[in-house]
Image (cartoon, rainbow, N blue to C red; front, side, top):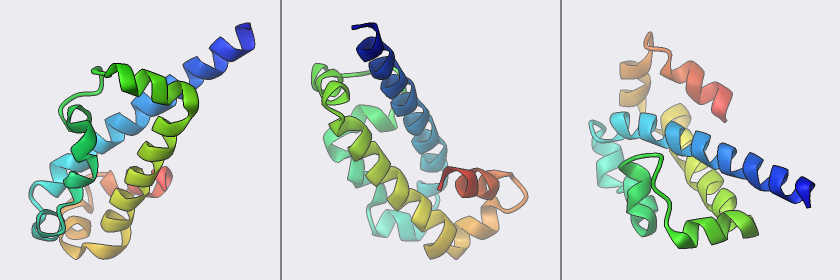
Length: 109
């Protein structure tokens, strides 16, 4: 089942990319009053290691990559974070303007 392993590897790489994006967004959220008040980073409460680094995976994470649940979860959180950056938070938009982050958020969303 070489095709299965290839698909699983693609899912793992994609999940790592989303996690890297989340870590970049975290930098903005910790300085954003609205994000703190709305507890955006708490969306990852079940997977606290996701806001600490991109290389730690629990056994459950690996099981969830296999089932597709992890990507679904990460995409949902990423969409919420990008929505906050692109639409909801003027402070982040002002702060990030000129730093390339809005371009990142536009291409990620």
